[in-house]
Image (cartoon, rainbow, N blue to C red):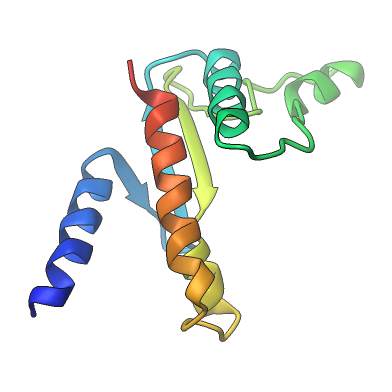
Amino acid sequence: MNRWLPFLFAMLLAFSTAALGADGLVAIKSPFSGKETMNRFEENAKQRGLNVFARIDHAAGAARIGKTLRPTEVWEDAQGQVWLGYNDPAFLAQRHGVAQCPAASGLSKALAALAEATIAH
């Protein structure tokens, strides 16, 4: 049981600020605007040596065809709350039949740390 204690603690900590959806989506409330959240995410990723290949602004695309969307690089709900979300790699590994993939756990931890750094004040 002791070997599971750090994992359980990490999961409880993650659930204190994030919601894990049925489809493996981790969603974390951001205190920043959508644009600022994405700028912070990109900067934190680059500081960790990661490459950001694309930032897709669906709201800008919608505007080009005369439609309106709330900010969608990260999403903003009807109440104006900005959310940073990502698919949990551990869930993806399980869904694709490779639940024992040794990289999934590390990727989950890295994404959680990146997300938490992004929303930190």
